[in-house]
Image (cartoon, rainbow, N blue to C red; front, side):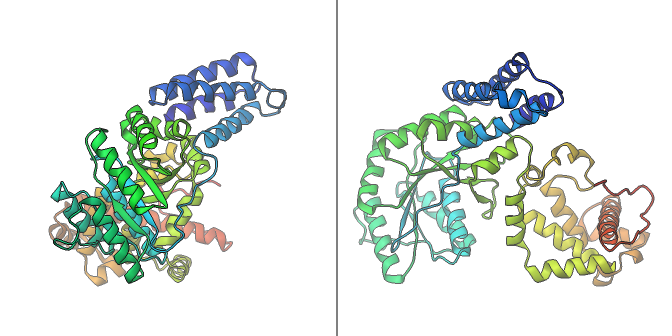
Length: 446
């Protein structure tokens, strides 16, 4: 969907003048692109209608850059379709309860742990609660991801919570109040499909726990089914917001554009990877920019700041300026990249970089990054500090120690030299002096 929309708008920007016929043709293509992406027909009709109405207005048609004005209109309408402004979680009050609801397999349990980890990093003391007592594996899974997130998971006492899921939820809230914990994140039962038993249990739990948030966890790859599920959960339980998982996947993605418009409930969070760190606040304007290829530098900067302390950043900059980069620095940056999630997702945040993916020296592959880290870790301390001493025999030893090939070791060293040359080139330019680069390495033009 993103690629098609970008292609359509690129064609409009290339035209010096636009008439109603050109705008109408572009709107037809936009309509087809959205329908193919599984966006609701009603949503598409209204969305394209608003774009066409504004795009043929006097202000756009008489502009010196009508193509750019149409892009601006599309961005504004896409932002509005996704919700307009970001919606914060409501967590006020003692031991505020967050009820995680959704179908089985949609990612509820993992999302609950991701959210708990995120809240813990913000200074909260969250408590995770498993109330799917019919599936023993569900409780065990939450305990496992809770340990990974470093967040306590409520353990029901034998014989004390005989009333089932609702009793477990009540006991967890009471314990959270005693221990000064909160918010209480309740992982509820799911089904393979919506049924009356499931909805009845959720309604009872909502009435008993009075949650501040009822978050519906939806798999973004399920297309129009996600919209139907959202409508049914909202009608029966009354959700306060949506969490879209697998938003970093290559699915058609129409759910993201349809759910907000159909239910009227905001998308509050987005899962963008499998790791516990891969959960973002959902910003409609930033998502609209990503879809249209404008990037999302704000989110990228926030993620980078969370990974890098200020003194570390200053030290790295100083080493670059002094020409003292080594493979230890290279390894640290590789490890940070793997923690920040899918590189395809990260590149989508950088304006204009999607078209350059094939030209980047690093392959966009998390597995490849991990292999490179293993190669560096197989080197001695001296080899990491002084890569120039790594001759043929050392390369063979490093390859054997890392379980990789000599060719892969050679490629890593080549990529390190490329990174070093580019960073030193930028540092040299900033300092007002020129540096000669190795043959075949060119700095990007500003």
